[in-house]
Amino acid sequence: MTGKLSTGQRLEIRVDTPACSGCRLCEMMCSLYHEGVVNLEKARIRISDNYAESLYEPHICQLCEPPDCVAICPQGALTQDPETGVIVVDNELCTGCIACVEACPYDAIRWSGELERLFVCDRCGGQPLCIQFCTSGALGLVEAG
Image 1 (spheres, rainbow, N blue to C red):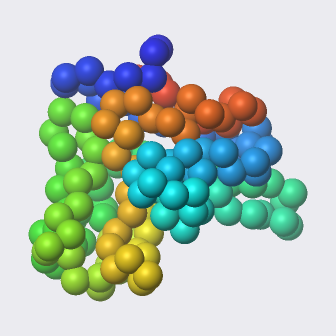
Image 2 (cartoon, rainbow, N blue to C red):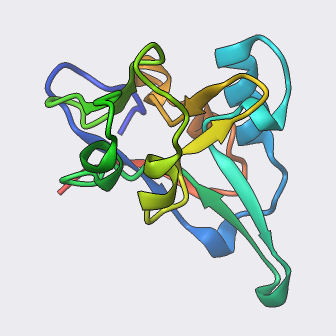
């Protein structure tokens, strides 16, 4: 798999939590690509520290079918692309109620109070940088299904 989405292709990012080293290169590249700055708070992927189990845990959209985040949004600000499964956010409709954040079983959608908007993985338009820069192999692109 090349890591590039093609029209009509529904791909998911595989997460291998034990392989994650916590280097946070994925978060850095994500925020740099999307926001033009290296700022972990502005990344669409998030790494959490699970000190009790000595693990770092990547959180990224798993393209649920059907997605709880879309279903629960009272404003209709979230939709799911029917071809790729990517969650699309209409920032003009989003009120910041965070119902979608609370509904996500993967802890993969975040609200930024600083930027007053949602963050959810968009697969970098077809070439997820998090995968390209994951040196530990904790992230991989696989065909869904």
